[in-house]
Structures are given as C-alpha cells and as structure tokens.
Amino acid sequence: MNKNIAILCNSLAGSGRSIKMASEVALKLKKSNIEYSTFNNDWPNEFKKFTDLFIIGGDGTLNFFVNKYPEIDLPIVIFNGGTGNDFHWNLYGNISFDDQFQVALTTIPRPVDLGKCNNIYFINGVGVGFEAAISKALTGKKKLPGKTSFLLSVLKNIFTYQSKSYSINTEQGKFNTKYLLIDIFNGQRAGGGFYIAPKAEENDGLFDVIISKALNVFQRLRYLPVIEKGNHLKLPFITYFKTNKISIQSNQLIQFHLDGEYAEADRLELSILPSQLLFRY
Image 1: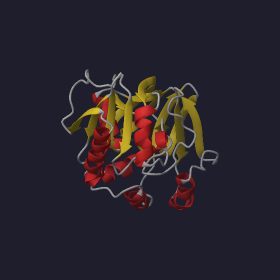
Image 2: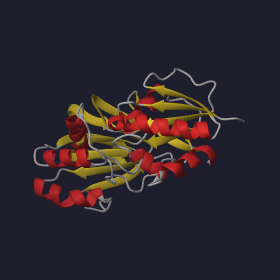
Image 3: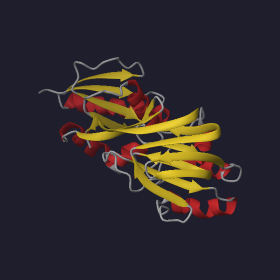
Image 4: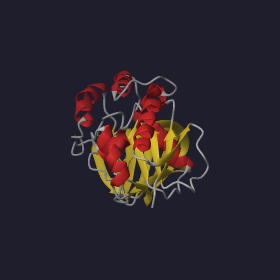
C-alpha cells in the first residue's frame, strides 16, 4: 500500500522551530516520492485518504492532538518540534532527525496508552500541586528550550509554594494529608528532562503514581536534584505505585496540569485507556 502522509504542524511550537522541521520532513518525503499534505494549525476533521500522521511539535501540540482526535486509528509519529518534548523522548530517546525519519517510514506501529482526566485526554502525565503552580506560572510566556524555563519556575516556586491537603482514592489504598505534589504519569519525563516517573511504560495499561508529602524549603532544595535524575522513588516521603484508576479531591480548587497545560477543577477522576493509540517508534 502506498503511503500518504498528513503532516500536522503547530506553527507556535518551539518558537518557529516546528515550521522549519515540517519543511524538512516534507522535503524528505518529496525526495522519497511519498505523497503528503502539510497542515499548519488548521487541521482537518478527518484523515480518510491518509495512511500515517506526522505531528511536528512538543508535548502541548501532542496534547491538543489527542483531545481533537482521541479515537484516531492511524499510525502516528511525533517529531520533536516543541520546547518541551518529553513524550517524544519517551518513545524515541535521543534519536537523530534522519534516523527518526527512517523509523517513521519503516517501523511497525505499536500501541500506546492514553489517559483521561475528567473529560480531558492526556498522553504524558498529570501533575497536581507544586507542578501545577509551575505550569500556571509558565502559561502564556515564551518558553526556553529544554528544561530551562521549567527549572527557573521551579526555583522561584520552591520558596513560596504552600502544600495543600488532598484525599486520594485508588484500589491500592486511600491517602489523606498535605502533599507537595501528586503525579499520575504514562510517560517517564516532564519539564524538559525531569524524570518524575522513571519506571513508567507507555503501553502497560497502568499509570505510575508518585506522591510526595509536604516538604520544607530546605528539603525541597536538597531533593530537587534527586527527583530530576529519577532517584526518588524509595525516599521515605515518597509513595509510589501503579494503577489504572485514581480519584483526587480537596477542600479547595485543585490546580493541575495535563501534559504541561494548566487547568483547574473541583475533583479529578483519572482512568487509563489501554492501547488507545498507535505510534511508529
């Protein structure tokens, strides 16, 4: 079967880097005599004539995609055209552009899980509490590449953030006290390179849940580098487990992010949709 690729580009991703990368992808497809169409921002409602979808952008672009097309059944490839490319790394690691292009054309598609939080979909992870404060602070601001912007916001909030009380209910147990953060992840990384859930697998049908009790400023400064490297799961103030469903309540409005996109709600109900999407990786 001849391929026909839809290139979906977010022109705002990566401060214009995505546009350049989309042009490079299109040029490679043209040289390979593969049919394609490029869509910049104005994406179609359906892809009946296409065989594959190439998304150019970061985690925010991918989050927009899964919420616009949660039941898409075509093979997907994500190229790292954003400032935050954590889920791209989760699938492809530090692959070169040329090598990923070959993977995109030749690799058999594999299933990837999709998360649902209330009525919103996510693919990488949800962060409640401290991470949400960071995400809120970055909303609407021009982001620097990699984890620079995330780290700067962390250092600012680490001195001022006030831990809040949450009630967490899962099949693994109930938890009710003040927490610094609650992370529910499908991917391993967030913030451009913080290994929040180092044991997460994108196709095991389970979330990796990481809960940290409230910490004082000195503890936060001490353990930030440990969390960044993913060496925190056995720390005494960390609770870690896997689950396919979790609910979170609080006595005040819950601040959270989905794949880095800030949101607020009175209550969170999260569930995983196993093998919902197909990716070539």
